[in-house]
Amino acid sequence: NAGVTQTPKFQVLKTGQSMTLQCAQDMNHEYMSWYRQDPGMGLRLIHYSVGAGITDQGEVPNGYNVSRSTTEDFPLRLLSAAPSQTSVYFCASGPMGTEETQYFGPGTRLLVL
Amino acid sequence: SQQGEEDPQALSIQEGENATMNCSYKTSINNLQWYRQNSGRGLVHLILIRSNEREKHSGRLRVTLDTSKKSSSLLITASRAADTASYFCATDAWNNDMRFGAGTRLTVKP
Image (cartoon, rainbow over all chains, first blue to last red; front, side, top):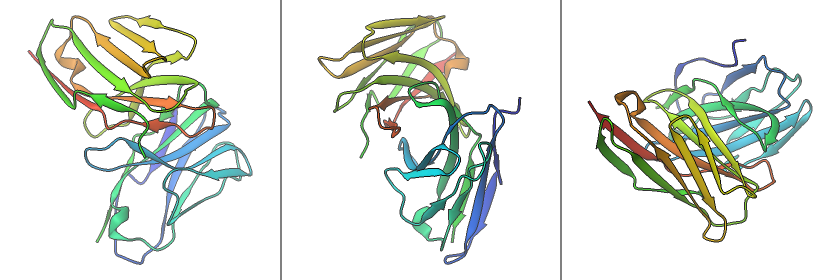
């Protein structure tokens, strides 16, 4: 099992550009989520999904869109990148929401100029 | 807003010593989880403790939970240089919205 994979590992964007961060898991987990981590801070939840076709907002959803068309994939879209979105983004998955262990991907480091 | 807050923010100890980190939170929880993050890497799950549990062990790790004080502690015994990492507590309040603290940065000197 590859677990949770994320691409790209690193990305530089210009203000106003859009992009999609990819996340995939091969553990057949229903729950998937996206977090951002800023320097010296913990993770903050952006969006989550409890199954294909179902998504919901987390603590900091503004500027981000998600969709969940399959159990395996949960892409995060930045609609119009801003410098405030410079961060490290982590995708996670779990078998039963947040009631059980979460498995994290290696992260995507995003720099918005 | 962050739910959990770790204390201390940073901890430096010698190899072989024990390390204790504390986590306080604000609302009722379903469970509390501890994660480790090595520099520049993803988070790795350490222990999950449910609201009806008071103590759990896993190898050199011991976690306690006091729901009356809304606090938890993580003890790492006989620490090793490889334990150097940031440690985060995360709380689940039955709503699929897991909240993380800012973490404790542990340095274990050989």
